[in-house]
Image (tube, rainbow, N blue to C red; front, side, top):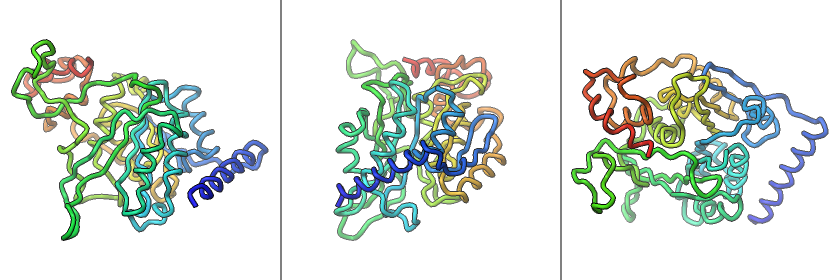
Length: 331
Protein backbone atom coordinates (compact mmCIF):
# COMPACT_ATOMS: atom_id res chain seq x y z
CA UNK A 1 0.00 0.00 0.00
CA UNK A 2 2.85 2.37 0.84
CA UNK A 3 4.53 1.65 -2.51
CA UNK A 4 1.31 2.35 -4.37
CA UNK A 5 0.80 5.51 -2.36
CA UNK A 6 4.33 6.67 -3.19
CA UNK A 7 3.86 5.94 -6.89
CA UNK A 8 0.60 7.90 -6.97
CA UNK A 9 2.18 10.87 -5.19
CA UNK A 10 5.19 10.81 -7.53
CA UNK A 11 2.89 10.68 -10.56
CA UNK A 12 0.92 13.66 -9.26
CA UNK A 13 4.12 15.58 -8.62
CA UNK A 14 5.39 14.81 -12.14
CA UNK A 15 2.06 15.91 -13.57
CA UNK A 16 2.28 19.23 -11.74
CA UNK A 17 5.78 19.80 -13.09
CA UNK A 18 4.64 18.91 -16.63
CA UNK A 19 1.67 21.27 -16.50
CA UNK A 20 3.84 23.99 -15.03
CA UNK A 21 6.40 23.62 -17.81
CA UNK A 22 3.79 23.83 -20.56
CA UNK A 23 1.98 26.87 -19.33
CA UNK A 24 -0.93 25.38 -17.37
CA UNK A 25 0.06 27.30 -14.28
CA UNK A 26 -1.86 27.94 -11.12
CA UNK A 27 -2.26 31.57 -10.04
CA UNK A 28 0.78 33.06 -8.37
CA UNK A 29 0.66 32.69 -4.59
CA UNK A 30 0.00 35.72 -2.45
CA UNK A 31 3.17 37.23 -1.01
CA UNK A 32 3.23 39.73 1.82
CA UNK A 33 6.47 41.65 2.06
CA UNK A 34 7.73 43.03 5.36
CA UNK A 35 10.89 45.01 5.99
CA UNK A 36 12.54 41.93 7.46
CA UNK A 37 10.86 39.08 5.61
CA UNK A 38 8.24 37.53 3.38
CA UNK A 39 5.11 35.45 3.95
CA UNK A 40 3.93 33.24 1.08
CA UNK A 41 0.43 31.75 0.86
CA UNK A 42 1.00 28.49 -0.98
CA UNK A 43 2.04 24.87 -0.70
CA UNK A 44 5.69 24.20 -0.03
CA UNK A 45 7.33 22.27 -2.87
CA UNK A 46 4.83 23.39 -5.51
CA UNK A 47 6.15 25.01 -8.72
CA UNK A 48 4.32 28.23 -7.86
CA UNK A 49 6.00 28.55 -4.46
CA UNK A 50 9.34 27.55 -6.00
CA UNK A 51 8.97 30.43 -8.44
CA UNK A 52 8.19 32.79 -5.58
CA UNK A 53 11.27 31.63 -3.65
CA UNK A 54 13.45 32.07 -6.72
CA UNK A 55 12.19 35.63 -7.02
CA UNK A 56 12.98 36.36 -3.38
CA UNK A 57 16.34 34.62 -3.07
CA UNK A 58 17.64 35.42 -6.57
CA UNK A 59 20.01 32.47 -6.63
CA UNK A 60 21.05 32.63 -2.99
CA UNK A 61 20.58 29.70 -0.65
CA UNK A 62 19.82 29.38 3.04
CA UNK A 63 21.81 28.26 6.05
CA UNK A 64 18.77 27.27 8.12
CA UNK A 65 15.26 25.88 7.61
CA UNK A 66 12.93 25.14 10.54
CA UNK A 67 10.02 22.88 9.63
CA UNK A 68 7.09 21.82 11.80
CA UNK A 69 5.01 19.78 9.33
CA UNK A 70 1.82 17.85 10.04
CA UNK A 71 2.61 14.86 12.24
CA UNK A 72 -0.17 12.65 10.86
CA UNK A 73 -3.45 11.89 12.65
CA UNK A 74 -2.40 13.59 15.89
CA UNK A 75 -4.94 16.42 15.79
CA UNK A 76 -8.38 16.39 14.22
CA UNK A 77 -7.71 19.04 11.56
CA UNK A 78 -7.93 17.95 7.93
CA UNK A 79 -4.37 19.05 7.21
CA UNK A 80 -3.08 16.42 9.67
CA UNK A 81 -4.84 13.49 8.01
CA UNK A 82 -3.25 11.00 5.62
CA UNK A 83 0.36 12.09 6.26
CA UNK A 84 2.90 9.36 5.49
CA UNK A 85 6.66 9.04 5.86
CA UNK A 86 6.98 9.55 2.10
CA UNK A 87 5.51 13.03 2.56
CA UNK A 88 8.31 13.82 5.02
CA UNK A 89 10.84 12.55 2.48
CA UNK A 90 9.32 14.72 -0.25
CA UNK A 91 9.36 17.78 2.00
CA UNK A 92 12.98 17.11 3.00
CA UNK A 93 14.06 16.84 -0.63
CA UNK A 94 12.34 20.16 -1.28
CA UNK A 95 14.17 21.72 1.68
CA UNK A 96 17.55 20.42 0.57
CA UNK A 97 17.20 22.31 -2.69
CA UNK A 98 17.26 25.64 -0.83
CA UNK A 99 20.11 24.87 1.58
CA UNK A 100 23.75 25.80 1.21
CA UNK A 101 26.35 23.07 1.64
CA UNK A 102 26.53 22.56 5.38
CA UNK A 103 23.13 24.17 5.85
CA UNK A 104 20.82 22.80 8.53
CA UNK A 105 17.18 21.76 8.53
CA UNK A 106 15.25 21.03 11.70
CA UNK A 107 12.23 18.80 11.16
CA UNK A 108 9.73 18.29 13.99
CA UNK A 109 7.77 15.10 14.48
CA UNK A 110 6.13 12.87 17.06
CA UNK A 111 6.38 9.21 18.02
CA UNK A 112 2.96 8.59 16.46
CA UNK A 113 0.55 5.87 17.46
CA UNK A 114 0.84 2.07 17.61
CA UNK A 115 1.31 0.64 14.10
CA UNK A 116 1.45 4.18 12.68
CA UNK A 117 4.94 5.54 13.34
CA UNK A 118 5.24 8.04 10.51
CA UNK A 119 8.17 9.98 11.95
CA UNK A 120 10.12 6.87 12.95
CA UNK A 121 9.74 5.47 9.43
CA UNK A 122 10.99 8.77 8.08
CA UNK A 123 14.03 8.84 10.37
CA UNK A 124 14.99 5.31 9.33
CA UNK A 125 15.18 6.22 5.63
CA UNK A 126 15.84 9.96 5.38
CA UNK A 127 19.60 9.66 4.91
CA UNK A 128 19.32 6.94 2.27
CA UNK A 129 16.50 8.61 0.32
CA UNK A 130 17.57 12.27 0.49
CA UNK A 131 21.33 12.25 0.96
CA UNK A 132 20.97 14.50 3.99
CA UNK A 133 22.88 13.64 7.16
CA UNK A 134 20.95 13.29 10.41
CA UNK A 135 23.40 14.96 12.73
CA UNK A 136 21.32 14.52 15.86
CA UNK A 137 17.85 13.84 17.21
CA UNK A 138 16.58 16.35 19.75
CA UNK A 139 13.95 15.51 22.32
CA UNK A 140 11.88 18.37 23.70
CA UNK A 141 10.81 17.35 27.20
CA UNK A 142 7.67 19.31 28.01
CA UNK A 143 6.09 20.13 31.35
CA UNK A 144 2.53 18.87 30.96
CA UNK A 145 2.18 15.09 30.94
CA UNK A 146 -0.43 12.95 29.23
CA UNK A 147 -0.99 9.25 29.60
CA UNK A 148 -3.02 6.24 30.59
CA UNK A 149 -3.11 4.37 33.85
CA UNK A 150 -1.25 1.44 32.30
CA UNK A 151 1.51 3.43 30.57
CA UNK A 152 4.32 5.90 31.25
CA UNK A 153 3.31 9.55 31.09
CA UNK A 154 4.00 11.21 27.75
CA UNK A 155 5.89 14.52 27.72
CA UNK A 156 8.01 14.58 24.56
CA UNK A 157 8.29 15.72 20.97
CA UNK A 158 11.14 14.94 18.60
CA UNK A 159 13.12 17.09 16.19
CA UNK A 160 15.61 15.77 13.64
CA UNK A 161 18.60 17.97 12.90
CA UNK A 162 19.60 17.35 9.28
CA UNK A 163 22.57 18.71 7.36
CA UNK A 164 23.10 19.16 3.65
CA UNK A 165 26.49 17.46 3.82
CA UNK A 166 28.40 15.93 6.69
CA UNK A 167 29.14 18.88 8.98
CA UNK A 168 27.35 22.15 9.74
CA UNK A 169 28.85 25.24 8.16
CA UNK A 170 27.89 27.33 11.19
CA UNK A 171 27.52 26.10 14.76
CA UNK A 172 27.71 28.46 17.74
CA UNK A 173 27.82 26.36 20.89
CA UNK A 174 24.52 26.82 22.78
CA UNK A 175 24.76 27.30 26.52
CA UNK A 176 22.26 26.87 29.30
CA UNK A 177 21.59 29.43 32.00
CA UNK A 178 22.79 26.92 34.58
CA UNK A 179 26.43 27.13 35.69
CA UNK A 180 28.43 23.91 35.57
CA UNK A 181 30.14 24.31 38.95
CA UNK A 182 33.34 22.59 37.80
CA UNK A 183 36.13 23.25 35.32
CA UNK A 184 35.66 20.09 33.25
CA UNK A 185 36.36 16.38 33.49
CA UNK A 186 39.62 16.41 31.50
CA UNK A 187 42.35 18.88 32.54
CA UNK A 188 43.72 18.82 29.00
CA UNK A 189 40.38 20.14 27.70
CA UNK A 190 39.07 22.65 30.24
CA UNK A 191 35.56 24.01 29.84
CA UNK A 192 35.38 27.20 27.76
CA UNK A 193 32.47 28.60 29.71
CA UNK A 194 31.19 28.38 33.26
CA UNK A 195 27.74 27.63 31.85
CA UNK A 196 26.66 24.12 30.89
CA UNK A 197 26.32 23.26 27.22
CA UNK A 198 22.90 22.42 25.85
CA UNK A 199 22.38 18.71 25.18
CA UNK A 200 20.01 16.97 22.77
CA UNK A 201 17.41 16.72 25.55
CA UNK A 202 15.77 20.14 25.99
CA UNK A 203 14.13 20.34 29.41
CA UNK A 204 14.18 24.09 30.10
CA UNK A 205 11.48 25.25 27.66
CA UNK A 206 7.85 25.04 28.63
CA UNK A 207 5.07 24.53 26.11
CA UNK A 208 2.40 27.22 25.74
CA UNK A 209 -0.43 26.75 28.20
CA UNK A 210 -2.47 29.80 27.18
CA UNK A 211 -2.71 32.43 24.46
CA UNK A 212 -2.23 29.99 21.58
CA UNK A 213 -3.57 31.10 18.19
CA UNK A 214 -2.83 27.78 16.45
CA UNK A 215 -3.45 24.25 17.71
CA UNK A 216 0.15 23.19 17.01
CA UNK A 217 1.84 26.43 18.10
CA UNK A 218 5.24 26.05 19.75
CA UNK A 219 7.12 28.55 21.92
CA UNK A 220 9.38 30.90 19.98
CA UNK A 221 12.30 29.98 22.23
CA UNK A 222 12.71 26.65 20.42
CA UNK A 223 13.33 28.41 17.13
CA UNK A 224 15.49 31.07 18.79
CA UNK A 225 17.97 28.40 19.91
CA UNK A 226 18.25 26.96 16.40
CA UNK A 227 18.59 30.40 14.83
CA UNK A 228 21.29 31.59 17.24
CA UNK A 229 23.25 28.35 16.74
CA UNK A 230 23.28 28.34 12.93
CA UNK A 231 23.23 32.01 11.85
CA UNK A 232 25.32 35.06 12.60
CA UNK A 233 23.93 38.34 13.94
CA UNK A 234 24.17 41.49 11.82
CA UNK A 235 23.66 45.11 12.77
CA UNK A 236 21.82 45.86 9.52
CA UNK A 237 18.69 43.78 8.97
CA UNK A 238 19.18 44.01 5.19
CA UNK A 239 22.36 41.94 5.60
CA UNK A 240 20.90 39.49 8.12
CA UNK A 241 20.61 35.77 7.47
CA UNK A 242 17.29 34.48 6.14
CA UNK A 243 15.57 31.59 7.92
CA UNK A 244 12.80 29.69 6.16
CA UNK A 245 9.79 27.98 7.72
CA UNK A 246 7.82 25.98 5.12
CA UNK A 247 4.94 25.15 7.51
CA UNK A 248 4.48 28.49 9.19
CA UNK A 249 1.30 27.87 11.21
CA UNK A 250 1.11 30.81 13.60
CA UNK A 251 4.38 32.43 12.47
CA UNK A 252 6.49 31.64 15.55
CA UNK A 253 9.70 31.35 13.50
CA UNK A 254 9.27 34.89 12.18
CA UNK A 255 8.91 36.29 15.69
CA UNK A 256 12.01 34.39 16.79
CA UNK A 257 13.86 35.90 13.82
CA UNK A 258 12.72 39.38 14.80
CA UNK A 259 13.86 38.87 18.38
CA UNK A 260 17.31 37.86 17.11
CA UNK A 261 17.59 40.36 14.25
CA UNK A 262 17.33 37.88 11.38
CA UNK A 263 15.10 37.84 8.31
CA UNK A 264 12.49 35.22 7.49
CA UNK A 265 10.57 33.48 4.74
CA UNK A 266 7.35 31.86 5.90
CA UNK A 267 5.26 29.53 3.73
CA UNK A 268 1.70 28.72 4.77
CA UNK A 269 -0.86 27.02 2.55
CA UNK A 270 -3.94 27.85 4.64
CA UNK A 271 -5.40 31.24 3.69
CA UNK A 272 -6.75 31.83 7.19
CA UNK A 273 -3.40 31.14 8.82
CA UNK A 274 -1.67 33.29 6.18
CA UNK A 275 -3.84 36.26 7.17
CA UNK A 276 -3.32 35.50 10.86
CA UNK A 277 0.46 35.54 10.42
CA UNK A 278 0.42 38.78 8.44
CA UNK A 279 -1.84 40.49 10.98
CA UNK A 280 0.34 39.35 13.87
CA UNK A 281 3.52 40.51 12.16
CA UNK A 282 2.00 43.89 11.36
CA UNK A 283 0.96 44.35 15.01
CA UNK A 284 4.22 43.03 16.48
CA UNK A 285 6.26 45.18 18.82
CA UNK A 286 9.59 44.32 20.44
CA UNK A 287 9.20 42.70 23.82
CA UNK A 288 11.57 45.23 25.33
CA UNK A 289 13.67 48.12 24.08
CA UNK A 290 16.47 47.04 26.42
CA UNK A 291 17.83 43.77 27.76
CA UNK A 292 16.02 44.21 31.06
CA UNK A 293 14.14 41.07 32.03
CA UNK A 294 16.00 38.67 29.74
CA UNK A 295 17.76 35.63 31.16
CA UNK A 296 21.45 34.90 30.73
CA UNK A 297 20.60 32.23 28.16
CA UNK A 298 18.48 34.68 26.13
CA UNK A 299 21.22 37.29 26.26
CA UNK A 300 23.82 34.75 25.14
CA UNK A 301 21.60 33.55 22.31
CA UNK A 302 20.98 37.08 21.09
CA UNK A 303 24.49 38.43 21.37
CA UNK A 304 26.47 35.39 20.23
CA UNK A 305 29.52 36.71 18.46
CA UNK A 306 28.75 40.40 19.11
CA UNK A 307 30.70 42.98 21.04
CA UNK A 308 28.61 42.89 24.20
CA UNK A 309 29.80 46.27 25.42
CA UNK A 310 28.35 47.86 22.30
CA UNK A 311 24.83 46.69 23.12
CA UNK A 312 24.64 46.00 26.85
CA UNK A 313 25.17 48.84 29.35
CA UNK A 314 27.63 48.24 32.18
CA UNK A 315 24.91 48.66 34.77
CA UNK A 316 22.97 45.70 33.37
CA UNK A 317 23.17 42.77 35.85
CA UNK A 318 24.35 40.35 33.12
CA UNK A 319 26.97 42.64 31.57
CA UNK A 320 30.02 40.99 33.14
CA UNK A 321 28.72 37.49 32.47
CA UNK A 322 27.98 38.32 28.88
CA UNK A 323 31.33 40.02 28.33
CA UNK A 324 33.15 36.90 29.52
CA UNK A 325 30.93 34.28 27.91
CA UNK A 326 29.69 35.51 24.54
CA UNK A 327 32.85 34.67 22.61
CA UNK A 328 32.60 31.04 23.75
CA UNK A 329 29.65 30.62 21.43
CA UNK A 330 31.82 31.39 18.43
CA UNK A 331 34.26 28.54 19.09
